[in-house]
Image (cartoon, rainbow, N blue to C red; front, side, top):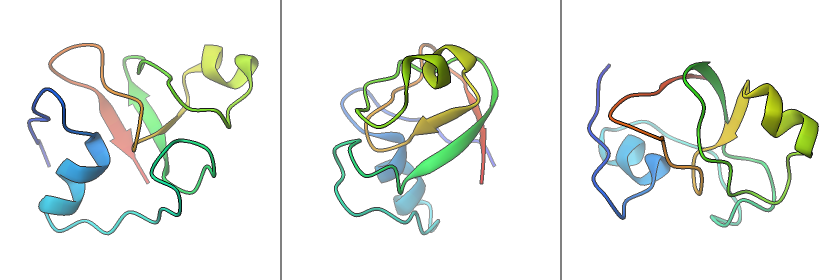
Length: 77
């Protein structure tokens, strides 16, 4: 599935509008529940739950607060 994430809209919001259910409790990148696996490219990590090492590894992102750095990012469950 390919989706366009408009400026100012989170990946989580875009996925939910496309009919995908994303577990989330806080919507602020604190609880870690909206975690997705990063398949390609590196997100801009704006969460407060991943360690610096986890952010550097770019294998996980919080889709409520971590936008993609360009036109595409690959994510998975």
